Length: 263
Image (cartoon, rainbow, N blue to C red):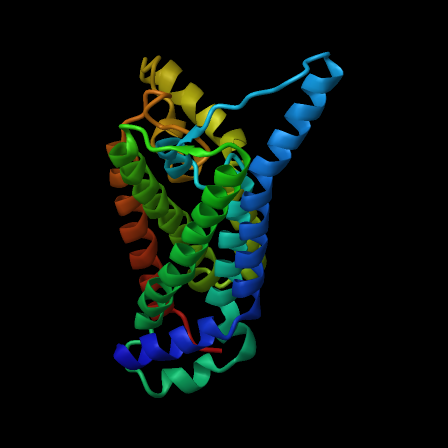
């Protein structure tokens, strides 16, 4: 297992897209607060305001939404993951690996463990960009809710890992790179709401659960919320659902790989 992890880690670090996507995420999260201040100042000037003052941004607010409202940047996570998960299949060197590792299904575990590193890097890159951008544009207020902000930041990182585990299932388990990328785009951009609407209606009509919304439990939807507590969503919902999804998707990927022949 150690050799697998080292091999996948080496392969991942050499992926140019990792550093490209990280750079794009930093630039966009850094520029967003600056552009917000610029355009707000211009609009207020056009409205006749002689001077515009801005309040500093609470640090807890930045921690809760490290992407600064640009949650569609999560697409970079999912697309990178789909490409990485399918690389050994598309290039054919999985055949060589199969001869060295009796349990080829362990490749799925190695891929998922290794992908956590770039996902974590991208999350902290987004946070760094947002912190620097807000510091320059508005200033930062060290408020009393920093602890809650850290908890939500870590919870959202876990939820991002859960989303990536779904991409693992389709890219490395079902072995369909195109489907993995398409699903990754939908999940990363929060576009699965289209599917969840009829599911909500089924629960509300058939099971008389009028206040049930599947969106309040699924990681890809919770990631789009700037402040989960403000929307009345318990952080524990995200933690439990993410852990369940990760276990199921990794286990199913291992099972599918153990049943399929290496081609």
